Image (cartoon, rainbow, N blue to C red; front, side, top):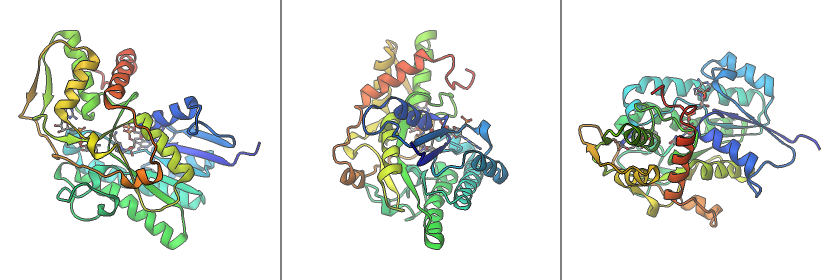
Length: 325
Ligand code: NAP
Ligand code: GFB
């Protein structure tokens, strides 16, 4: 059996990378590993992709035919607000090194990862793929947002000048096993899961940051993983595609806290610390383009996914990325 595809996943050890690895190894349906595919999941120990030389060394070692590019400096609202320049520079360097080295190695396809926070803050809703460059992103994460937007611009420039097949996806907020649970740097679901777990264990108050009013769409990492695999194998456009649950599945941060209290079986009270920022009020995205391609795609119900994520975190607390709490 000839090896048709060598698929390199940068950022393979993170939340999304681990979910793709799990689906490739465990899905017996159309998303699992196919004949002729070799999957390689990178960590930053394989090479710091901010370095052009280290990036070339990785590509020379694995000689990929296809790349899923996930590696990035990633974090929740509070980390983004604190390190805007690092989010801009690190991600600009990583993205330019990966895309240009993929070009030099004549990689057949690259699928990169943006985020719905790249869209303009002042916009019509629901947001769709055509609105990416229509105005400034939210103040809280402009460093990350502009670096991610430029991936779309880079993809179009490589296609325009060389015909490279470099595309991208735009997920909403992601959560699941293998997340980052650091109490300061994490996103809301892993952050609140960790806080609620500690509040139950130590019988201390469970405090949710902000007012609880902001609205978000959340996609389970294992659902996103299946969509990434479909994009790699089937999606033919250079233009990006939003990967998200529908607008009707948007929930408030208070709903998120309630789901976590239930999943962790926390019996105590919880309060809101309204001295903490809410960030962007909402970034409601349309998944109409995705639903045109995959009208029957089944998303895991939110509460089921939160429960599975909580069970994984509690079972793996000792090896999880808890920020050495
Ligand atoms: P994550 O859990 O923080 O994982 C980040 C990955 O990138 C890890 O594998 C890390 O390697 C690697 N990495 C970081 N800096 C690197 C460097 N300088 N050189 C090489 N590798 C490096 O992130 P994630 O949540 O899975 O995010 C994956 C992708 O999805 C990112 O592009 C992110 O922007 C995008 N995204 C995430 C969300 C979300 O809610 N999480 C939402 C939308 C889009 P180590 O494990 O060795 O550190
Ligand atoms: O997930 P999160 O950090 O990211 O926060 P964003 C979502 C909302 O949860 C905010 C509230 O309104 C927070 O005030 N929140 C409540 C908490 N308690 C907590 C907590 O303990 N930890 C955190 N982190 N939030 C990010 C962007 O925005 O979305 C990133 O800054 C990236 O660049 C990511 O795009 C997907 O949804 O506000």
